[in-house]
Image (cartoon, rainbow, N blue to C red; front, side):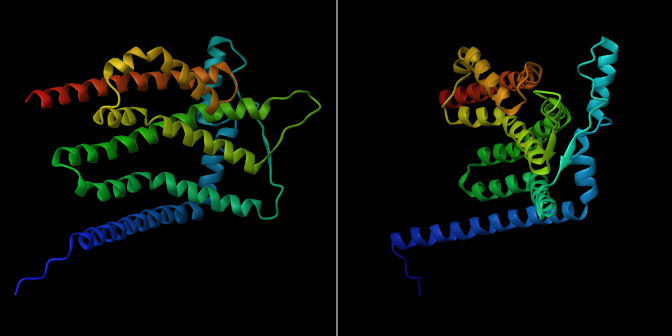
Length: 276
């Protein structure tokens, strides 16, 4: 006997709940990945804090040593941070423990970023055509790569400059800088994450071009306005000095030019498909 066909409304309702259940498991797996990496980070406190988080605040940090060598070669004393000594303090009873938990979760989220993107791709894959599915898989890899490049660029260049400028700036010699652990960590995390996200610009342009919202001619025509926008973004995510803003703006403009090339490639493909 043939199975009785359900009404259309019930089929849609069942489909919706099935998708919701599937989404729930993708979210659960992503959370498990974040927590797993967070536990690893929690158990390696000395590496996470002494080497990674507090590293840019020391004079022997890789970037600080390179800047000193460049300063000596060019006879510029201002960029050398060989006397960098920050007094980082904790003013709350549970401050250090809570900070340990917070940084462990942040580290877990950063390390699990490719896994989270893969889970998002697995969720939307059934709704994509074969060509779109292949492009989306590549987008997961490219997005992860751009994010980590942005994080490393920020950590090894922007973060040390930010710490040196803000941590040693004084309105008067009688006012000492004693920086709380919360302020220091929030600065490092926010600057690192912000630059990592901004480095996703080529991927954003890719999807906007696929949807037909932007074209290569539009991007080229508004290049000068984008330069102003990127300068503003650089000013927001860097310390208030022109040198740091330029250091961030230059690679962002490079990413924008790369975005134009990506958009041109997508535009040519769409034009060929429309003619065929």
